[in-house]
Length: 208
Image (tube, rainbow, N blue to C red):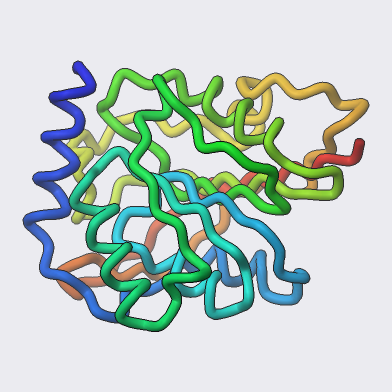
């Protein structure tokens, strides 16, 4: 799939959803970040903007990126409407071609899974290198297929957190895996329906 096709795909996905004035943050983000001192955070694949808004309200300075211009425009408008325009910078990036600048205390990549021809391991490697010492890379992937997912194949294989960590290829002398597990939870879809889903959670900390 070309970048143009992927952009059209994701613009269509977000344009088909009603604008949420109070989008929800991801559960694995809030449980991980609560208690951490706020700093600079990179939100990869910001989507509806729930994570970026929540982080900004906790005092974080947010750089939020997505391949979809619809998602970026909506988040920019939401940030201004909620008085958070000075804490959220929204940028459109095809991570296979460009990457946001800056140094971060946290990089959050929730469900960065796409039909776009993207070398995801390379993008996550670049994200990890953008961390300051002591910073964390939080990667949360689908471990199961939810009824509302754009992935329609129930037999699709979901790589484990350990496999994702191996694919990123970070030097263990400078990076420590703090968490790699597959917890379950009850999730709510865009239409309000609920289902039990599995998340693959990976947290890697830069130690040097």
